[in-house]
Image (cartoon, rainbow, N blue to C red; front, top):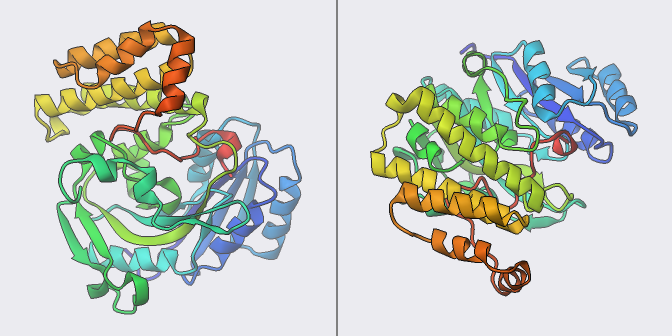
Length: 368
């Protein structure tokens, strides 16, 4: 890594004129100034093009592009094709970075040259920027709570030993380092707008999957990145993540797409990279069964009881025990009216394999 590497910031947007300026400003306000902001307007129908043109005219580090509406993955892929930096960072146009975000990640990266991707924790805010919840990453990605062991990382090191200027509430923060590919197979741990990844790794991973238009491509991308080697998680909230915008994963239809994509990704990884996974056959079966359970739950929520029953049965067959799948199977066989009553009585908890309980889906409407 050079002493002052250029960082290319990939920022897709769609109809987010209310927030996109604030996102761009948070990138330009970074204490690490050697950067370029690649903003790709994915066919917005509001005044986003005018806002982007204004920023590009005022700061040469902003490069604005526009394309027909194709989805967030296509927008990110175009920005990646234009990136000139040694490192790539991702930012959504309704989120905000703290000014020290990139500097902190590069400081840690300089101590771990073998690490190819770093991400951080995050705080959640409401649309009006009022606080919603601190350290939101570990709530949003339930794998942090449900995966075996106290930490998914091979080793934890105190952040203060690498960044002694970190004080206050983060003085006891840790950096998780190591190969977590097999752990990631069992549940997502990475949130895209917190990521900093080496350009050479991004090229090896290739483009985001544009076939996953309604969500799930982020997990597939980060799982592939983790397959390349050691990564690092900095347990400090470096971004403000907006919730309550109306297109989050809690939307029933969007959650269903995430569940389908998650299961598809697991099968693709098994087909192409089984030898890379340091998991036993029983652990792999458990991960697949959890994914089938998630999909069965979401199908039932969307009124697709027959397909829900099929995936509940597949979960039971894969796990070789009934597990919790029998509940979903039973509900799929009950009248819809009774199922609705049961659902209102108690909403099911997400399994570890879910990408999160509050993540926005990565479609163009959410690429903001």
